[in-house]
Length: 123
Image (cartoon, rainbow, N blue to C red; front, side, top):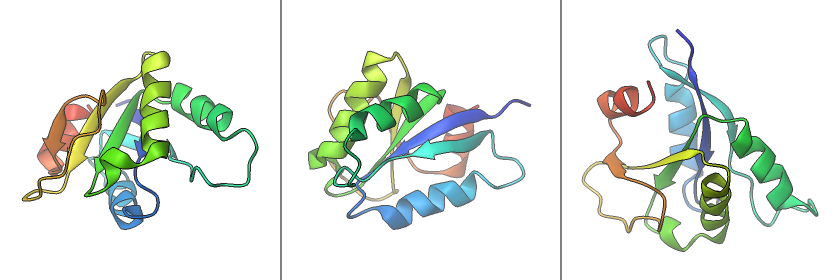
């Protein structure tokens, strides 16, 4: 089985723990996906942040946006979504169950983060 390559977009300042959880799920034996790359901190010292992010997104099959309380306002996430759209990469959003965060604009369907949903979305 070929695993989907996933780029994780997330609010670096607020949702790093959630990103780590998703990366951990990718290591499960029955995982249909692997983490090819993940979001870059926009404030990183690299001069060409967007070029680096775009290169990583282009190597992915899908972008998964982890939606937390402040993600809809995260400028880095918005830029990554725009880059994914520009390169015709599928985007989906996931949120922790029993939370009600705002969706990220133009970032696809928002799903509850369950193992069953991940296996369905990322197969």
